[in-house]
Length: 179
Image (cartoon, rainbow, N blue to C red; front, side):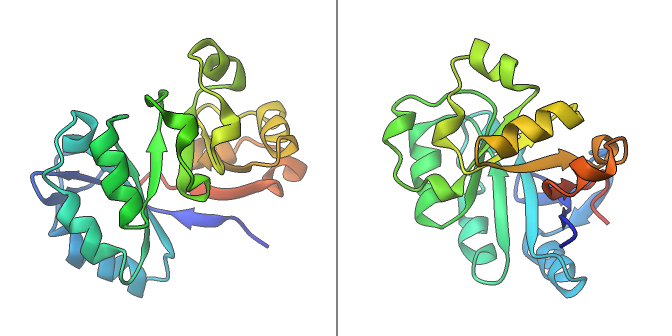
């Protein structure tokens, strides 16, 4: 089965942007509907407000999760994480959250790491996560993540450099453009 292709959308002030942050894509709901029509099953959202601890965009996810799966990068703030979990959003974290191991919905948790070693240095236990996004993914790191029983996600540019046998282990590809 080929890996899931996952487009990236940035959200700030209830508006959607392409990765270059110069191109407005429009309202997040409209953008997500177009992506669903294009066949995408999951959208990776970088919520620039939530990364700063601001929960202003959370109402958007309540509408999005009715018709498409989303994973949202946010700050490790308890209130934001609890709200996103209640909406059944996948949560992407790149640093540990307080009380993190107490979260019961691990199937919705996604770690974003540079490497397994880097995660260990940060005190980031991968056992609390269902999926792992590897920045700078290598064949070795993909194999290590899947050996831990985790689904590995790679950035599109890294995926292209992987050996064919490692590509077979990748569950999802984070696309480099949102179109």
